[in-house]
Image 1: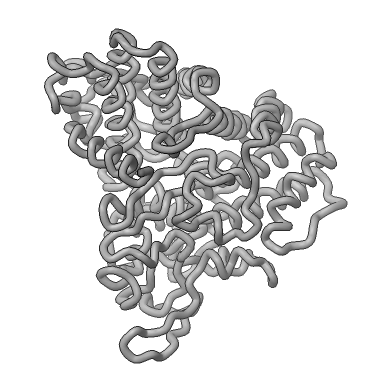
Image 2: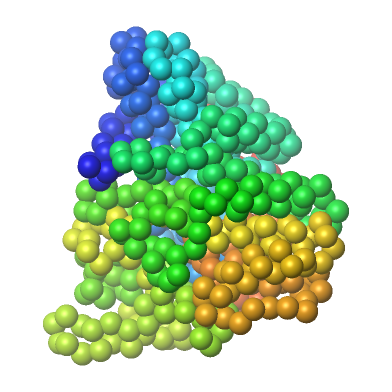
Amino acid sequence: MRLRYLLFILLTGWLLSCQPDLNLSPLGVPATSTFYKTAKDAESAVTAAYSSLRTIYSDENIVTPTTVGSDDGIPFLTGNADRVALWKYNLVSTNTFVNNIWSQAYAGIQRCNVVIARVPAIDMDQNLKERYQGEAKFLRALHYFNLVRFFGGVPLVLDETKSVGGVDVPRATTEEVYTLIEEDLAYAAEALPSRYSGLDLGRATSGAAKGLLAKVYLTRAGAVDNSPYWTLAAAKAKEVIDSGLYDLWDNYADVFELNNRCGKESLFEVLYITDQMGNGHTTHWAPRSAPIVPSNGFGTIRVTKSLWDGFAAGDKRRDATFLTSYVHPATGQSVNLSIDTSDPALAISLWKLADRTARTSGGKSFPYLRYSDILLIYAEATNEFNNGPTPDAYAALNRVRSRAGLQPLGGLDKSAFKDAVIRERRLELCWEGNRWFDLVRTGRLLDAVKAENSFGRDATILAHNVLFPIPQRERDTNPSLTQNTGY
């Protein structure tokens, strides 16, 4: 029953999607004059808002820039030129990935704004109405959080766009964008239930809103020693921890199993359905031409040696995360993969998101926010506002390390503990859309990119590259948009 509901969510969202960009007309199927009249219409509108995430967190959108733009992934060098440009920091305002991040986020925001604008007037159960508003505001905050971290201040579109005349919106300040994000998440945390059952599994919860708000506060704290956001981040993460609703799976690999979707470690995930409304994580990340996945592997991005070497001996996560060998189905011979080879057909590949049951497209969820992330947020923020690690900070960090089979840490000063947490985030959450953001917020991006110079990267990264350029096509249609410094 649950999978049928998930398919309905994704299919309905696809049918309702009519505008890939901010500068296009709003939802038009079915006509707004006859829609948004009943509780079922409200449900369909919320469904469409969720479905935007399916494209954003597929293999080639948020994952690519946060992986090849950091020190975790190397693009196949004769593939998409825009992917290689991200890796080398030859960033221009016409880059496909830059355009996609912007346009897909605003398409999702439009759908959220439709819910926020139209559902209140529907004659339906008041509690359900408020829940739908909370879900839409959670999703809108998620989209703006991506936008503000990639671009800085962006246009704040708070109302449903009903015509092309409504898109000439200037950029808000970074502070104004974050204020909206915090307001939306605070509303969602109050309006949403703590958990769902049956057909509603996978929807945003109050725990998801609080967890995302903790990450927002962590990001706002940046690299400022005495920022008040450290205290706010720790407090919000502690609310999630103290709720007792979440826990770690004993086995790291279990986090990503198909039958554990919406499980105890998940605060929020993007759901797919194998071979129906799936993703390309299986095929895109597998070794090039490897006959073990649908259409053979693409080898689009390979794992960096610095990431591979970051896993200590005995770290159970490495075997669960990467594919290091496979048996050729035709010959029966074992094919060993390498971290150093220049041959993309023999390169060690990401594997934890691979769905081996898929015939065309994988159905493993994309883990947007996990409990281990919350523990590491709490550890980092507590260390900061206490000017050094406390027993609670150690406990949170060492829970994540213990699950990985590593010895607990102790006796660290503030700086060393911070380094340990950032290192743990890299290993625990690798290729889950976090590394680039973590490097930017801690002021470590330039050093990390310059240090990861394998396969002739020689990135031309400069200080202004902590933000992406505003897409040129958006500036062409919206003259109010100014460009980021350096582009």
